Image 1 (cartoon, rainbow, N blue to C red):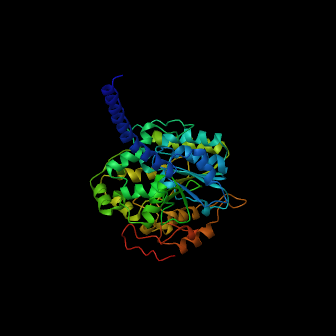
Image 2: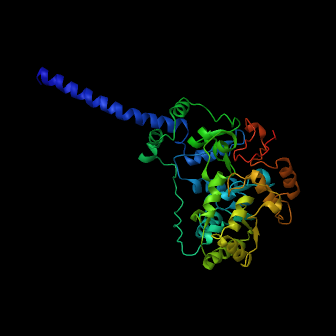
Length: 401
């Protein structure tokens, strides 16, 4: 090869190498962020970490993997619980400290009543709890709206894909991940300042203290302790306007589907035939939101669902309005998600099965008196660096340590 041609080839290689470096550097950054935030950790290893009694409690909050069902079922297999809570995100403030027996929250995994049968089959295939707290949401019973099909459980939900690999770069480009937060994660900044007692696994847990505990319950550290973004479901002016305007989020101008009421009856019969004691719950909503729904001409459906459930062949414990059991709006996370204390009030109203107590209502009532007005019941206070803040701006007194 002539000298000029060799020099040109070397320049060509240099340009190619520079282009590869420019391409690979962002990719390397993305992989570094995934690695340092433990997003590359296999789900089996997550379960081992969350089950280690000698290690600090692990909070798992992934921002990459859509593995809510797989994670909860893996916890179910590991813990072999006597009590299970099954339902949507409105059930995820049921926690192990409320119970005197092993407990798991299979929560956030039901998005429609059509999900019940396949999830019950999957649960019973892994063991039979003594009690299931079965939460239903009133918007599951709308007539004329098809439910999304239930996808199968995946064997390797934490498997890395190109889309997942590039996720941190996308967050940076969209402004969802700041340069300062990226640097903190990349440098191995160990944990959210508000949660010194937890080991975070996953980007959401590491940056915001949001994730799933070892019992399947949820912790919203970003909401409880920091000045994070306010959701529309926490802006009462927005909620009230939506209800008044007949927003579909609150099932406005809908009819009850009797076939979907029958699906509840079938699901409960399935569990009872397997020897499981079932408590069907209609979870709480904020008192002011209950009043707005009742006053709205668009939301007669809500009361119609409550009536249909009351007339069904199952016993439904209706906590839609939690004020009669002592809960106030300061004990909520947002308009339709009750916090720890409100859910302890719910459990305290349920009579446990005879025999060795699975929960003690009297003890729960004492706890609700201690933590009244709070969304979080910090049983392990050393895990939290600060008091709960008045994140709803209701003027709530959060004066407990």
